[in-house]
Length: 532
Image 1: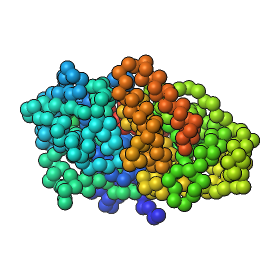
Image 2 (image 1 turned 90 degrees about the horizontal axis):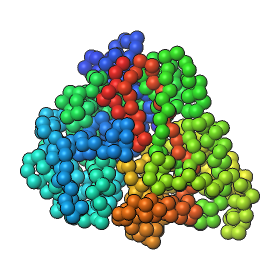
Image 3 (image 1 turned 60 degrees about the vertical axis):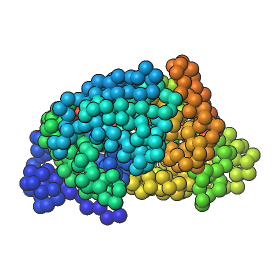
Image 4 (image 1 turned 135 degrees about the horizontal axis):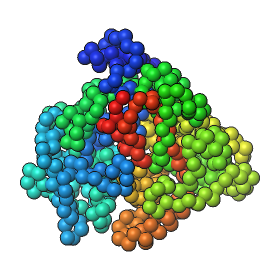
């Protein structure tokens, strides 16, 4: 793939001159009112909040869109009113009536109406893109969603649901990025062939967040302008430029030279080299990400990947401690269950360690001891390529050849979403602050059709899916936490997933950047308070 990069000064100059990707203007440093962020943004498939499910897309949604309720920036398990000013729960516990914030407008100037809330939630369900399974948890489908969304008046909307879940869970669902509220009038003006404006929103925005998209050039840059009329207040910056820099060494160079204000996804060795340098600060923030190795039981090219003996042996072929301590140097901690630490119901037990002889015994008993080869898909960025190489070395000791197939993130996601992989080293981050967010991803694939993580890996689990559904419907908090612990143990022992690590977010900033907030979840990236 050929990529053409714009220099930070070129991008900054382009903004200053009113052109986006035109001739560069000479500048010695990044402008005071612009933030230059160096990271790989080639994972973006769509910037439509009803479709975007990639890391960079999700990281941008809090800047572009707002929801009725969202997690508090510092206490993420608490929900704050954002576009909703207040709400009232129905006595039956299966509906909430929201009062929309007075005077709230979109970046277009259009007012935020009850109609926009109904349109946005209905649109996301009817589009049926990757994150729709989150809204489906409320029992909504393309055929029935309209019957559960009611306009009370211009500023009040009633949201109800048929699923046997309580209002607190429904509020958590409505805090997920897929529940972002879009400007119906603006989106419909750009709709074509009944696509709900989906194609247009791949590269544009129609929200009420503190920023709006000025331009997006795939594999080059995402440029945001301030939205001074955002209901929660204008940002302190005039704009942000997310510059695609695929090479982590180049990202390090840009932040060292002052050509970038923030650099993400820098390897452990480079973080160590940057730590303590004048003008540089390294922000280390807890992350709810879990990294895992998964075998595709639905692979059309490798029948071995559906063999549970391979899954079991794989759990004993990972040098968990060596990867966490020596390879990643503290960027990640060993974690072997799908609910991240910090969430209700998570477990601390780590029963697996590197034991090659044990793995060989499992493979021999299953007739897999004559040597086998598995293609391992991985994003071509740190730390994933580094972890993949470590896995390759220890799996080889048991006669398993892992053929690493690195790819840019968008290609990687496309492969997984079409079940085109044999095995993959991947990550998952909860979409909202409830243990069911990850349980519905890893332990729900009832009809082998809902596009969960379990589906992506061809793991059809009707009985476990029923347990997962029962857990989300459980009203007793202690019983519910116990249910999730039991489900995690079943996945830990029997699934095609080998949960490996829970990373920390390590982000490098110039020391004049103040007010940046990185939260636990992927969407919790806040630029509105940033100043230089």
